[in-house]
Image 1: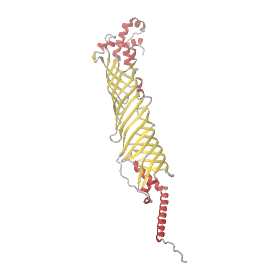
Image 2 (image 1 turned 30 degrees about the vertical axis):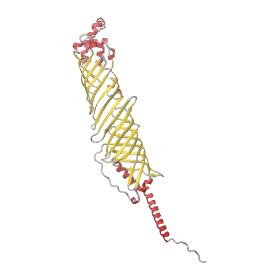
Image 3 (image 1 turned 90 degrees about the vertical axis):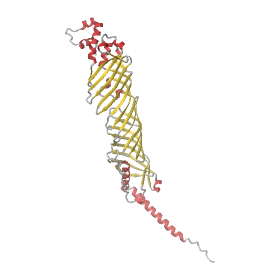
Image 4 (image 1 turned 180 degrees about the vertical axis):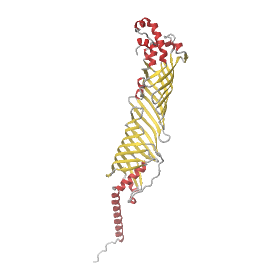
Length: 440
């Protein structure tokens, strides 16, 4: 009996060898890639790519590989001349990779989360320049492209000049030529202002210029602020605010004279100057010597703490000097003040005002209208008022003129009482007489 001959596949051995060859080569390459990504060379390459993204020198602490993520204890950045970053340190980094993208030649990082970022920003001094990538050995087996989809920072502590942000949550998305940045929570410290609570902010960065598209803040209990602006050589910032307690922003002792809430708008420039306007609501004046004298003259106790219907002014703040113009201060049916005031860096005052009083009030004081308030305009009788001295010890010109009228009114009303209370020594000045009856 003749045995059957088994079928022969001459090509089977060839393809098997080839398959084994390629499989072996792939495994060897895979082992080489695995060894490389765990090496210091890979960490150096990742630092280089990160540095290029932020125009900085970047150094990662040792990388740790997991099934779906890379972690690192910290990343330290030192900004180049073209970078917004002066220096920064991020701790507790976790990078989630899309491993499928490796097959298409792409390092795709879905998200980098950062536990805490401490960063100091600056104004760049040059334009960004192109960097050449120098991938080490094993680059033939590794993707040549890098893509980062999102950075989430749980708490960011950021400093820019004299502005400090603390514990702000940030989300950064890379876009062509820069980043978009969104934030919320935390606090913002700005010179001359109380601590602000960050509600939300939206900005973008292009070619090392930061554009603030919008930000809102709260100043408890009632204050709200919003801002838009940009950095760079044409830096500017526009700020609008409302419901801010005026005593929370006044310095150098001004808070003892006025209260209420303030609203307004200002524009800050690259030199640190600020120009704008403001209005006060629910305001009142107190501890003002000239108002105290007028209250005595007019026998009206409301002048001691004078409620104000209108308070507004334009301001220009530059180099620690403040200029107030178009000042309007009005108390219904009592008083109106118009003029300007300058405060120099040492706190010295120079103001030129007109003060107006309603005619019925002046009719109570014989001679007051003709002697001090001779100008009638818009239903008010006006007198000039000059302000000097310092914020700590202000002076004005009207009290000296009011004093004789106050004395005359008192003598007409209480002449016998005055004579009885005169001291044995002669009274040489009007002030001595006034102090007998009008303690301050």
